[in-house]
Image 1: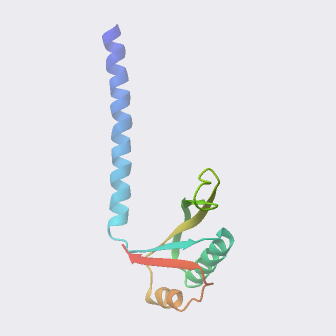
Image 2: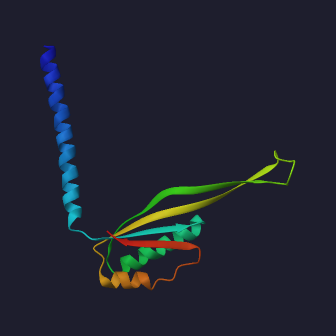
Image 3: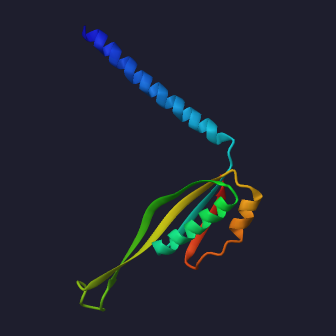
Length: 134
């Protein structure tokens, strides 16, 4: 009796893992022939970053491009500790931090018109853009 239950449980888990593998393979097959334009946008202020991402997406949608994103990436925080005064007052310190907000946008099968429109785009200062073809 216990052996039958164990066999039944084993077949259920093997079916689940088999379906997971099949969906993974299908997803990999679907992305093999597709070119992607991967855009990483970074800025210190999240409001400026979101407005520039919206501007990029609007430009890409104007030329009927397929867009994935924007995907928010983890915020990078750099912390600095500084002595308030010199010499003896080591316990008096100040801490400062800089936050770098990031977003990721993928454009599937970009046409030359989309790429040209994105290169001619003027974004506010303080926004850094990295573009890669994947």
